[in-house]
Image (tube, rainbow, N blue to C red):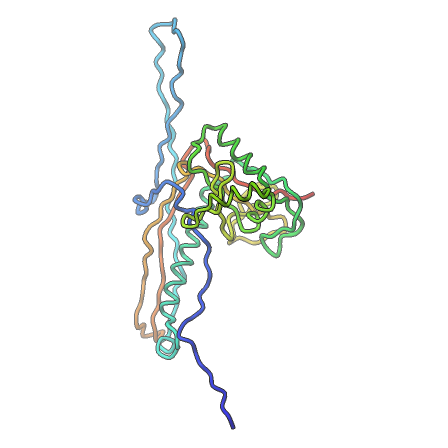
Length: 302
């Protein structure tokens, strides 16, 4: 009787991870990552200017500055066991796969945590105004949401211009569905101009109204009416809304430490090796007035 041959490949198909290039579009505070709290001094109100001053001597004032702070978080992976049997008998290198995947998962969560920090209390929100489409943030989310259109990008431009936010290094990050919405709203001419500004090496897909547009599989989500952030680690809700983020580079900061690996090789109780990872990370808006940041929230369809 003929025997069916089987073969085990020496490589493993790995997991996918999101593009986290948006993190670099910020002020780098990483040199301070080994501290518990980072302080960001903000200048107070400038002195008044008087034309043809008549009152002399002029009144002397004191300037009160502002102090913003943010704490550094410690992110850790669950320890994972690699048995001696797996290390010896498998056709592929499971050790390398574990180490690479857990590092990338840690970096993924560090990036997501940074988005939570930047969005903060959702001080400035812009709601989408497009046509209705199905909610997409989770299987639990129900009903329809208004699509992202170029009008929301223009609203962000107007807001930033009104606040004298620098015109350079403005960014607009949305998820894959909202990005598709935006492309659909552009005319052929607008789309051509948009795509001509793409820079894949920097994670930039195009440019619109002064914003460099970026995409990530998940960005943010909020509770109903954009009232509060709903973290991806929290329970899904029927009324949750997808959200993106617009910001200017000088208005947000990041602090990312080196990823540390801990190992217990040849553990006599588990008959194998145990690994875990740790990274210190933090970030925040840099301005006490909240300028230069806006959360782009999907509006619900009544």
